[in-house]
Length: 383
Image 1 (cartoon, rainbow, N blue to C red):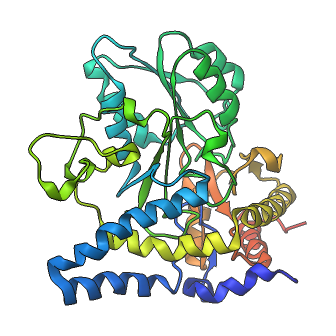
Image 2: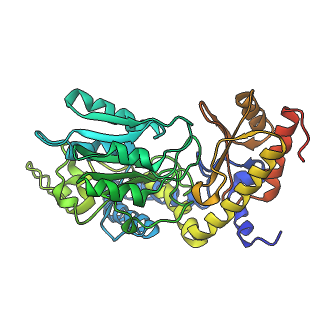
Image 3: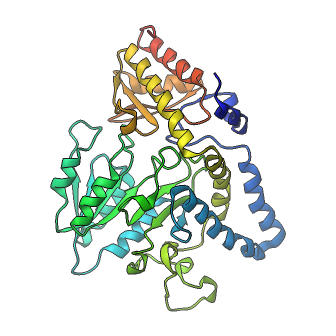
């Protein structure tokens, strides 16, 4: 197969010994990540506390590289170890005495942000969960019915983690804006796989991270905050790196401009350096190229699933699907374990099935191998 993207396979050591079809959960580690982490260790070892002279500007630089990827202006992205903390800080700025209390999300949202929302119900927040009878998709009409003049915010998962269903962020955001609601998008499942520009969305905040399609490892999450609205927000969850001048050690809080006000405490510099290798690779490859390949191999996965009479839990239309395909059948959880035992890395999620994905470094033969194993498991030949 004449695929120029396969030249990148040498950059990812795990591909030499496994069929890696799980980038939707955690991307493969680039070989060059070791060098980035070594920069952290060398600076700490050689400079001690003076290493902050390089680390502090690096944090801002990395945030702006994320901004470049997602089509955001410099200074509009803040970094943290996970989106749960960033979202908690955002909620602490949105929920105000005497203000709106209704937040609309869906039962297919990734649970982490739902847990944060439920934590605020003790303080009067009202969580409205849109029900999704098919367990895979969210009808746009359900958003129209749920969002009203009492809505404080909508929390929209761009990609549904159980099915790979791609939501229409633009339409949902527009209907929320018409009702005066804040628009919060969780793009963790899609960043680096599905092209988007946050400035093209009617979004006030967009959350994501590096350990999936960006091949950056854990501990390197981020949040975009719309520059036109950032200064309206005064997060109660605050820390010294969210101060306008952290190293002034002022006892009074003066928020940093823009997204940086959500920085809270000391950043995890090592994780942010480890994440840089994958980010730079994806920027070179281009998210459009990632998208074309994941769509093509995703269609092949669906064809193979159909040949085995497996239930496909993902949208068949590639334009409505993320980079992931989910298949289900009786015994799917044990079949997923069998795939892993045979060196084909996938995962299984309750209420969904076996999740598989192709990234830019995936060889088509790996997809064929996965379904050959499944064919033996269900005792049917691949047709």
